[in-house]
Each structure stands twice: as structure tokens, then as C-alpha cells.
Length: 269
Ligand code: 13P
Ligand code: ZN
Image 1: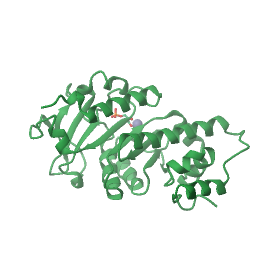
Image 2: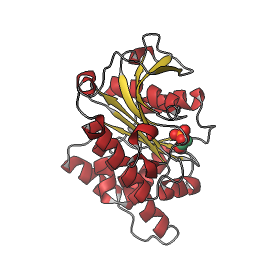
Image 3: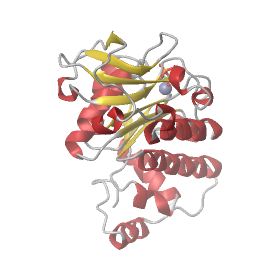
Image 4: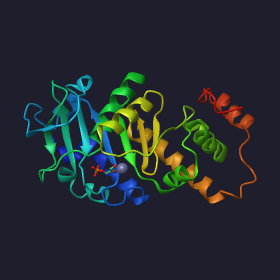
């Protein structure tokens, strides 16, 4: 059996959480990541038939039965993942009943997966239906994204337009736009259901007054989406009230045409 601490998926979780912490997005235990793994790859590092303990999820995710995820632990600090992956991360398999998680590795101090597990798992279901290669759900608290969301109406077309108008990269990176949910109680099945509904259409969903979710085929895609929103929101906030040059709609359309992209409907004139 190979050493799991050297497994590419453990390294990727360590690198992503460290980067996100250093960017100032994940104060204290803020943020969480879940990453769907290939069972054959996991089996090189673990006996996948050995369940350490079972943890009820509190919701049903039958469509994910048998799927294995590496997930950040609840209450765990992103800044600490790198130095102790086995305490701060866990590998769980959704059991046949769809309502139990089987712990295969990690959460060494008796901990469990993130409190946002419902939003993560339900979002995996939505994104897998949209894209069979989908793997990652990433949630974080980037400062400028939260600030911009606080000064803009809760209107995903308007929010997307403002982002596209502030940075020429924005429409190219997320032509499908950004979904926006109103302020809700986090850590609940209800916010999970609402997030997953948005995820049928969007790879990015803002939680008003809280943060953002990004998804993707791999860590770079999910991270790159959030990073581009955050950079653009920073430009928006730094120029707010003083801007004289917004990117015209013809240029945004020209960028989309150049890259053969279809921009989210109803945003551009
Ligand atoms: P967890 O520590 O449970 O992952 O919660 C952090 C968070 O960002 C809640 O939205
Ligand atoms: Zn959060």
C-alpha cells in the first residue's frame, strides 16, 4: 500500500487550502472543499473495505451511493491542513442507503465532514448531471466578492453584468455567469437544496453576505473561477462610484465570439 500522505488528491487538498488561506479568503475555519475520487486510485492507498466509522449525513443522496470523496473537516482551519492532513481531512464513501457516510480515512480526532456537506453533496449531484467530468465543489469567503455582493442587488444577471463590465477576462472565464442566492441560514439542508438548484445552471454561486461556491473538473478550474470573480470584484470595489470606463457590451460580445462562447442569456443588450 502506498503512503496516502503522498497521494496526489491529498497533496491537491493541502495545496488548495494553503493557497486559499494565504489569499485571505478562509479566516479561522471558513471554507470547505469536497473532491470526488476514483475508487481505483483510492485503493492504491487504502483498504476501501475497511470502514473506520459511519456518520449519518442528515439528508439523502442516493445518486452518490458508492462514490468516494475527500472532504475538509468541520471546524478545521485551512491554514492547518498541510501540517496535519489526517486530522483536518477525511475520505468518506456515501453508503448504499444514501444517508450515511462511511469514513475510510482521516478525521483522526473524532471529527467529521464540513457542516456544509449537504450543499456540497447536493451540488455534486447537479454538476455531475451537467458535466460527467465534474469533480470539485469549493466554498470560500473571499473579501471583495462578499463586499461587492453587499452593495449590489440580489440579481444574478445584474451581478454577472457588473463583473463582465469590470474585467475583460470575466466573460471568457465564466460566460455561463454567476448564480446568486439571498442570505440564508448556512449549514442546513435548505441552503443545500437551493444551492444545488442554482448549480444545475451555474458553476459559480454566491451566498449573499457569506461567500461563494465554485465547481469544476479539477482543483484548478474551481479555484480559477473563484479567483477570477474575486479579482474582478476587487476591481469593482476599488472603482465603485468613480468609474468612467466600463467595458461596453459590444466588446463583451466580441470577446465571447472570439473564444466561441455563449454568454449567459439576458445579460447583454
Ligand atoms: P465548516 O468548518 O463546517 O466547514 O464551516 C465553515 C464555513 O465556511 C461555513 O459556511
Ligand atoms: Zn462559509
